[in-house]
Amino acid sequence: MIASLVLRGDLRAQLGREAREAFPRECCGLIEGMREGDAAHAIALHPTRNLASESDRFEIDPAEQFRLMREVRERGAEIIGCYHSHPNGAASPSARDREGAGETGFIWLIASLGKAQPVALNAYLYEGDAFSPIALA
Image 1 (cartoon, one colour):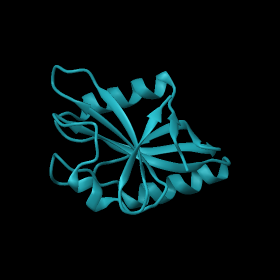
Image 2: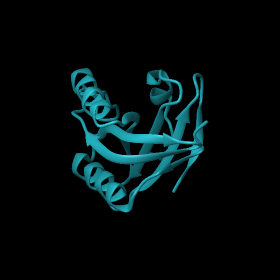
Image 3: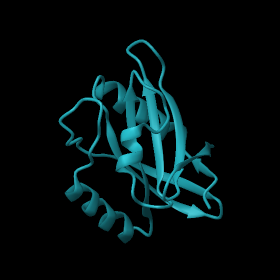
């Protein structure tokens, strides 16, 4: 089971920029990476369009998701999770996140931010019926 997500500083900064640019809407995207033992290593963050009509939701374009899944598989990596922001909210899974989760073992990286607040990041592993926090390294 995955216990931590290794996320380089440049990827943290990228997510922060995406969250700020999307504010007050949620940004979203997919995490390319590899699993090694109990750690997942993020290689790249791939921003995707947010198809949700409401500003406090995210919906990744399925066509983009399938295209990215094929591309990263060709490079020997995989889509290990997704990320999104919670403008003016907490960096923890919301009730809507729990409703939308479906893939066991999938990592959820959540950024919270306010208009004048710094971006906070937390990572979770979806385990089929609940989210468990995992360390960010």
